Amino acid sequence: MKVLLLVPKRYGFHQSFRETFESLGGEIHTIDYSHLVRGWQSKVNTQMFRFPDKLRLRWESYFYNRVNQFYLQEYNRIKPDIVFIYNNELLLPETLAHFKRHSKIGFFLGDCPYYTPTSRHFLPILYYADAIYTYDTFWIEQLTKVGLKNMHYLYPHTPAGDFYEKELPEATYQELKSEVLYVGMCYKTSWGFKKAKFLSCFTDFDLQIHGDDSWPKWFSYFPELEKRYYPRSGHITVERLNDMYNATKIAPVDANPGLLNALHWRWVEALGAGALPVMEWQQNVAEIFGDADVPAIKCFDEAREVTAFYLNNEDKRQEMVRYMQKIVAEKHSVEGNAAFIAETMGMRTKVKAH
Image (cartoon, rainbow, N blue to C red):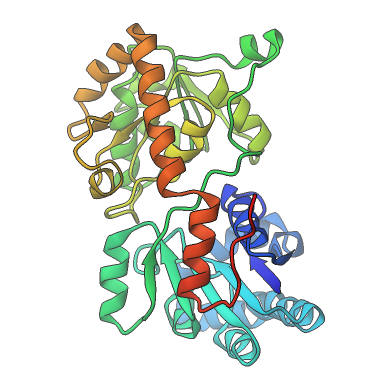
């Protein structure tokens, strides 16, 4: 069984799905279009939804067609049985129609087409899917209303080789150590104010924020964040991020604009490296942990008290980390996810014994 992953390699999701399909005996091939485009092209494309449709169509005839011609060339060479796609990856409907003739098609939605305007084709291409997976139950409800079928709730497992606990060399630990660590972009809309407000609740501690150039816009409202801010140049590698989480104690996890019920996958990454996620409360907290008393904040002002408690009680912090890791291992293992995908996509294969 050949599996074609259209999943960016820079995301932890890539290794998760690679391991998932490998456990089903798949021969994995990955296509990541990022090597085809230059930085300015990517930036233009992310803003193209703001322009009149006439300009958007001219851009797509150049940019999208170039990417999709590459997809078709590689698809015809590999001849996969399964195509598994993260979000939309700039796919055109006619490309999906070609895939559909010979392959089963699955999608994992890390973003929702209603809230993330990355492509005007995002919603239309989902109708070609044999199955769609996402970790936000609200999206499932909303997308089912428009006739999408075979939608399922799924959290990707944490790749064992990506986010794990390790003993850092002393020099690395001293370079990276913090009490509270946040790695992520901000927003230039009011969602950015909300994110800055959340992070401001952690400034009583040794907080580090590693992010993009959207953060400084909010420093006039939250001046205490400025000295905690470390401008990020380029993408932080998985290896580096794992070290950063190993050198901290607490990882704040907020909800981004597109997440209605879900917890951002960052909580799973941080937890794998032994950092305790202090999460903005979302409905998924109850879905994952039931009524267990995990560190999920319903009012931002609670963050200071919760963080202080766990920083002052290392044994309790470790105990909570172990409990949450156990839940993840039980509910979202590679074997469990693989069996679920095989069943819901109608694949005639079984999970390989480990």
